Length: 49
Length: 227
Length: 234
Image (cartoon, rainbow over all chains, first blue to last red; front, side, top):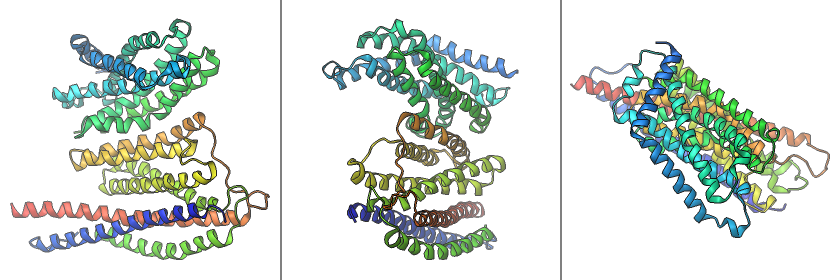
């Protein structure tokens, strides 16, 4: 197989980009979900959304 | 108020304002001249053996693109500075008439500046403009109109945002790529002395671009003008 | 809102399992099963992920277009959240195309970048939708961000075929990349692998879109809850 280096780096980059985005999405989801829970708890009389 | 008379009224308002102050024209014209000077410093055309036929299209279109962006930005910035954006939105006419009026005025402004810049650039770079004048006028007019159609819509959008001066070039330049590509290609063929047949299809494509985005502007301007 | 969130979570779960199963299958096919391409060798295998990324980016921009129209017609913030999410993903997958394209081009054409038609189009399109995302951050308020970006989303997508066509007129064509070492043209196994990669990437896009929409909707909830808190406190 010639040019294996380039093939390796191409797929590695794809995984880094996708994994990075997935990771950032998960972190943001967790942060915002906990924000929602805190705000709901603080509302007087509860919240039905 | 009827749509076409409203458009003409708005166009005439912008033209009258510009005739009175000549702010936009002066700034745009001298900006174009400065760009031409920067080009002459940046590339040593003579030692590269390149004539205006080879490089003229690029020079003309870079100059036109950036000076047109200045002009488009200014047409709405003036309204914002004088707190007239709400006034435009409240005009007793269809918002599309406001769009058409602004679009007409913007096209005219850019074309007037180019009427001076084109002969000056040919003079500076040593090219006989007269032999290609009709073809070049056609190419420049059609492409400027296309560019202004999209530019007027995007200028109206960007003026309402915080960093409007940065946002307009960011929005307009990638979206106007087709008209710039076709304009450059047609201009290159025209400057090389080729007949209209060889670049007529490019002018037609630019005309289609202008029609498509004029229609888009007419349909969508209402949403842009909402407060 | 909570019903939508539960629905999205359900969709995400299904899509996650599908992608988790299909992705290893794709990788196995790409690296172990398909034959080497006759002129380009192993590096041609980049295309099994490069082209699906481009397809997904275009799909993303189409979703921006459709949701922008739906937002302007209905003024439901859900459609604006969908448009924003799709634009973000479109830019992400466009970036993947723009990274993998040069990595493929370097060993094959000897240069990182060539201004050839499709790469140039992808670059210009990415700029259009980056401008869309920047516009959203510069708007004065939420409603304005939604409205103005919807207009840009519609105009931007209308421009997609025009940009593609204009760049093709300007430059040459993309190379044909599916001839196997047998020299017989497109091998069936290459086509099947390619279609499977396209399907997997589409499902991956839908998964990421669902997650990103859920994030957008949760953010809307936060703003709504903060407003209620302010009103109830006042």
